[in-house]
Image (cartoon, rainbow, N blue to C red; front, side, top):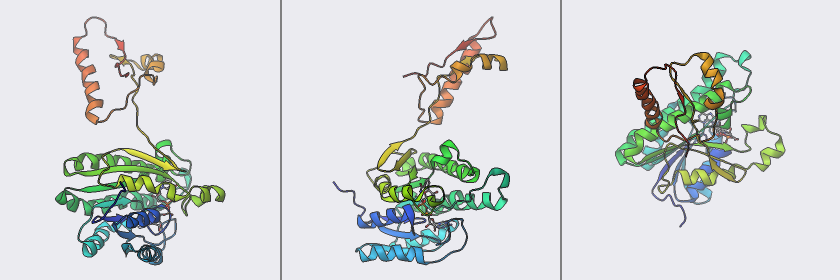
Length: 313
Ligand code: NAI
């Protein structure tokens, strides 16, 4: 059955171009009413114009869809959510997508490069989600997507600001997922790879043309549908490939009352990923440590014990 969004209202931030534009257009095609937010500035987070959002709204309307523009910067999330409420009376979906780059080596990074990146990516996602949250709780329904990056997972030269903000979004989304659980609000994070105005600076033009944003769109559309049952997860899309990323904890090694030398000598086991496990909840991770702690008390005689935590499965 086709994934429809009739009666639903979505905010797509930074929807005037690149990835966001494709999400807005595809959601509208499927019956969703869309707030097309875009500040219309340049990719470094300076200047502003109404034309980017207006163009996408016109495109949606000419295809028979329903959309309104919003030109506020994402740091003013209450105004963006107000646009949804004033025009459509509700808000079901927030796609935190707006983004800029201020790439520069850490040595040469200015306070402004750091602050602007956090203002747009992290504060922006916070601000829009914060304003939408009470509506979602009240109606016991919401779908939220935050946009991270492989720069967050692996680090990226010249992007200490961007990778830090993008990683912050993973933690933000994972915690929202927990707080939203009983209200049927699902929050998940996306890692996209696509040619766009943003990636033009770091990719050859050939790749920019080949990596169509439309390859990412189907995953995002599914992620914000009412049948999507995942929560607090990280998904990835690009070039027609769709997948997920998870953290794994090694089985590790217990060394009671360890010295630094003993940690060094046990390094092979500490870092051995054979039998590593993904933990679904923070409780699982701490529970394991608590069990080890409890064992300390049972030890007699020898002050040093070494075992693995038995993580494998
Ligand atoms: P893009 O530059 O084409 O689109 C970003 C849009 O956000 C622009 O239209 C821009 O005007 C808007 N925007 C910027 N600051 C804003 C603000 N303060 N308020 C409202 N709108 C604002 O870039 P692209 O590639 O489509 O990026 C979308 C998201 O995906 C960004 O968060 C980016 O960091 C992320 N991303 C993209 C990747 C890629 O390969 N394209 C890789 C990893 C992450």
